[in-house]
Image (cartoon, rainbow, N blue to C red; front, side, top):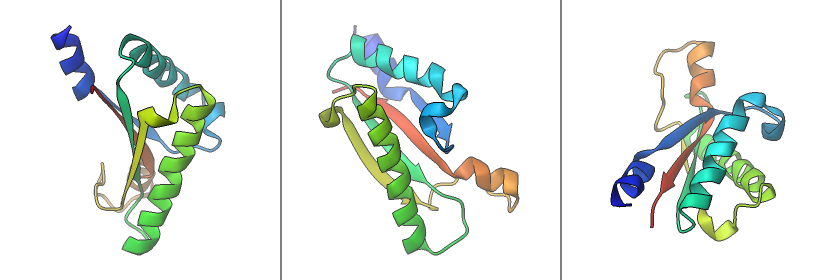
Length: 119
């Protein structure tokens, strides 16, 4: 059991921001995985990190990251994930996945990152 919890704590999903989130077929496998984890580990917490690309001010991007994380949180709540199992944080543009100044790279940085943590 401890090994499974340790693997769970290290597991994370990076999901690119697409609107509407529920309509994206690429999101379905991650949704199923999150549901399975919460079923197997009912005390687990999902941390949703809101991220943005490098364009715009730090203040603007922190707000945008917060809205992105909250939208993902709302979606998980619609799936039946209890609100007390979801935490959010916005990193704005401070933690990019990609550092090139290209549209492809910027699109990778506009995301909600899901990390599952065991309690």
